[in-house]
Amino acid sequence: MNAIVLHSVVPVRQTASECSEQVTQLLFAQTVTVIERQPRWTRIRLEEDGQEGWVDEKMIVPMTDEESKQVSSYANNAIVKMPMAYAVSENNGQTIPLTAGTRLPDYQDGHFSILGVSFKIDPTMVAEQPIAMNATNLMQIVRFFLNIPYLWGGKNAMGMDCSGFTQVIHAIFGHSLLRNASEQAQQGKLISQLSRAQAGDLAFFDHGDGHISHVGILLDNERIIHCSGRVKVEKMDPKGIFSNEPNVGYTHHLVSIRRI
Image 1 (cartoon, one colour):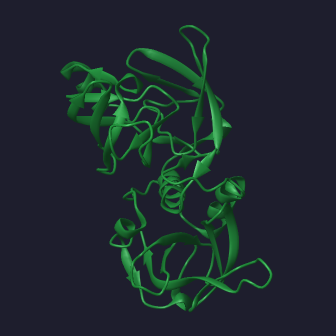
Image 2: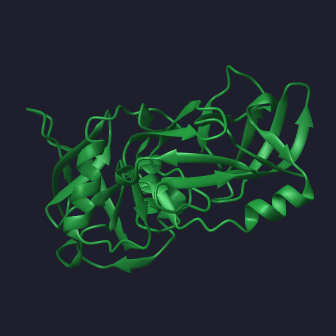
Image 3: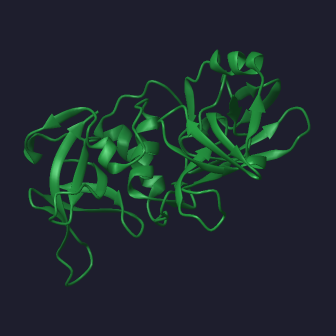
């Protein structure tokens, strides 16, 4: 059985408990496959990146086969590009906040619809894809994300983790990333040296143990934007990330660079 998210953000947990670790989040209009059901809880697999976990059953809406076919036929050529935007239902006037990375089904000229419900949204908040991944376009997008706080498993304007940030930003440019840093480190083309990096390339880090534990987006071959405590821009060199904070020094050891 398939289901759809009609809330702005839905937490996905490691186990069937509100006290369990949040592993990721679902965004409005994302679809999932139901794997298992328990009282109050449903185990799902996110169709977009394959991430699995448990959600409160009332936070997703089951779909019939016909509704699933309808949703799968939607053209998802537009996406919310700002940290937060607001859509207004043309059926009842209710407003729903949408976070960056939310795809807008059947979008056209500030309007989109899903399962028979039509919405309007400010077109300046929307990116119609494809968008070229270059330094100018990247800076125009990421500057609005600065200082969003770190949240484990988060990928919305109120809190993101490092790989949630990279997944959302690359989604705006039409790129599909897997959810976790270690998974993203297997995608795309390996870039052998930092001097050959371009804006938008992903840089992966460890703490000296070989285990990928962090990811960020290169703005050029000397600067990186990443979410560590908060979304921020810091200096990069072949050794790793050099903190802006006084008397801190290097915080992350560079392992690899990949181009999506």
